[in-house]
Length: 307
Image (tube, rainbow, N blue to C red; front, side):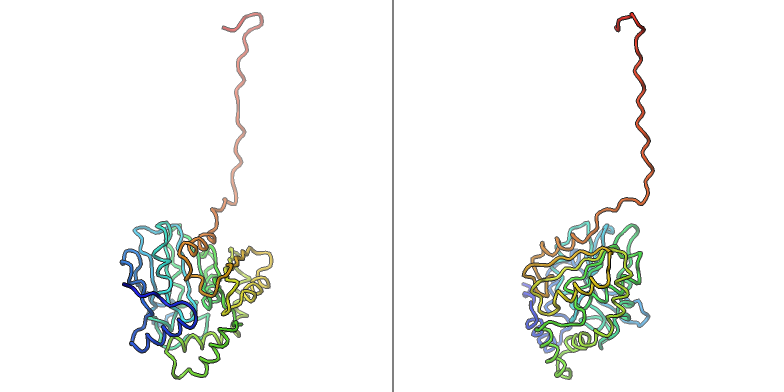
């Protein structure tokens, strides 16, 4: 029987330590609980020409679905935590969840500090079948990277979700963990070390994220737990409000939600994502409908009664 995957910051840290001690690169691989026809481990070559092999989880489909959901995970970047959501996805949707460069089974071994380089490396995820649309989800640290990806492919991404977005200002729990991690960089496992280095050096790069977010003409959805003590919701809301102006933004505050919204009930997570799929847009121009013509009924001659 598959082991229950850990939840919460301390549990995630313990999972990382245990995995390193056992020589594993994955953290309770819950995708193994499902057949390859439901959730499948895959990989691709990065889009920046670095020669990195990037690992991901996918939902195989016999034919391309109308919508492809691409998830850019946070830090540490572990796609395994999305396995139950992938398994519960309906057949008219498909999903790919990535282990970002520097995490899990993805190369390189060291962290990649520049979010623009990461966005370029993950660009192959945005490949779509004809008439297929993409819902791009940036989770936690991955939110800023997703913004850069969407700005680089403005005609490819139809909708952007900033899920528990982390934008340079950690909450109290994350601040404590980052401080402790920074003092123990030489002894903590690779994935935790890379996560600490990423989070502590993100803030100077946010100017480029603001510019990219302001250029986007697609709907942006801010989905954030109101009890998130890792990435406070106020920071994400302020960033979007300052950069989007009159462009479309939808904010969903998840009552009682913490930083790990994707670890909630699968049905609730799927409903949250589905709410971010735009309704079918009307064509920008339609020919006017011709007036309905009615032929006059013939009248009988005067003085002659109708049959």
